[in-house]
Length: 68
Image (cartoon, rainbow, N blue to C red; front, side, top):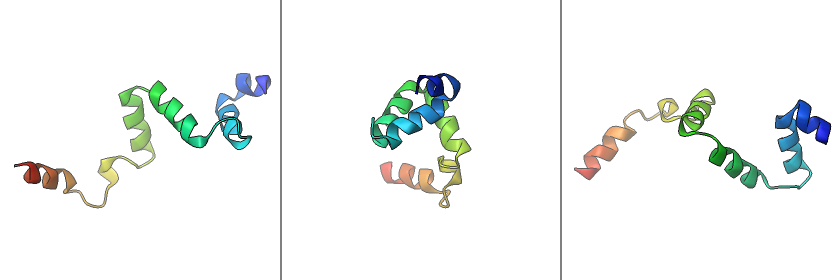
């Protein structure tokens, strides 16, 4: 596994989960804590998970009206 860690750390991390070394939730938490806010925003956007890909474009407007 040391070779895999050196050559393909992404696969190494995924194998930790697959072999029960850690849970997927724990790996996700580790990755999010490591990443900057900009990294997380970019990752969400690249995977079409950011708010700009929501079907309902008026969510932000609705929230501000409720606060008024």
